[in-house]
Length: 376
Image (cartoon, rainbow, N blue to C red; front, side, top):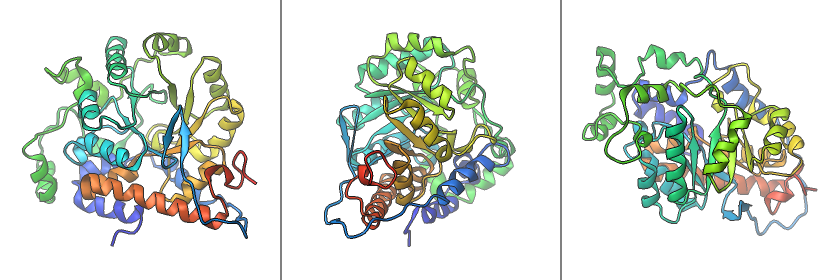
């Protein structure tokens, strides 16, 4: 019986080949940062208020003029079609069904136009890696044309983190068969049968048209996160010239960077350490959140990702000032186990747990959570 996110994680571990599960679950170096994300969340206490009318609980939030049914979005994750064929579409559809946004990664395996066609009314955000500015410009212009509502520039990957599990598994583009990989695939026939008709996924957004998937070197560069390290604060003016909607920075942990973002006209921040996949010495996202919230002083919304595994974790982040949170691994677990229905089930678990947490805390809406702005 799958009752919580941990149940889905364990099931995903059994249904995915080892090299795929390690890619999803892996972290930088020794995994200290990833464990801090969860550990620091677990140590936070929220004091309930009692004798309040909680017959109606409202979990909705308004973000950039759009109403989310739940203060949770799906974070950008790459190579989703390695977890389940057409994973990007399935996750986007699950998000649309839940009334929340889905963030499509530059490292997606479906073209952004095809994802939009699959969820014509859905809330879609576009995440951007800048390897080459001409290619980045093309992606931004295409996302603008296809009504992606927000652009999320990931800023914590000047170089890829030291992900030793991927190295040990020989995880690279293009995939090269080895005896170890062959045994891994034979040991997971369900996954292998789903993948066989489609072959290895590629990074579909690396060409302006659908005629190709980009050069092998470009694919490898994206997998290795070989980014443009000359990108600096002043470079944001270039993006502003291309993108007319909300522009967010993902990967901000320092209060001074938060203030710099506001000064440079950024519309929102995502406090994140990349799920512990970049710098193993980084603070947990939840511990950095209050400093960033204080630094921006309510001028722009602040979001957070990293370590969210329970609806109670969502409540804790909101109580510390987050407008909403994003989840990455949890919905990938659901995708691995049950496709779109599995991802939707994970979102349903988070929603049910959040409602229960709010009821127990005496909060009828997210603004009433103890410690949150407006909370009492």
